[in-house]
Image 1 (cartoon, helix red, strand yellow):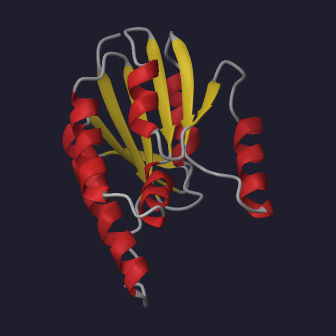
Image 2 (tube, helix red, strand yellow):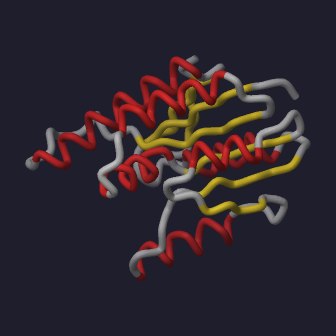
Length: 170
């Protein structure tokens, strides 16, 4: 394997995570699942448990709600298959923690350009719906769009998943 970056986009419950996992499952190497979600309530605890139960046992999970760049750097290597699930939760963690989102986005784009293994990035497409009614939600939608654009530019492949059906965009 030589550095390959794959971005998988889709809406909520579109099948994007399952598709990214299938792409990773088909590859040999050390499988690292970089999870950005935090179990802050019962609903998220259930979602995380369901995600863990659904994925193959060869995936080693690393929790990185804010430390995504560091985790990618630490686990990347020629035999690594890294799956980030998901960029938009990482983004919301950054925004809620009042971090510099633009700087983090730029650092991540530079990092993925130098990836040695395979990096599968999962992200929500949130810009195809109605305009949110509040400033924070509009800012999140904008930041998610800019993050997805930056990752799409850096990626070797981009997929969009709708109703479990992947479509190759790049």
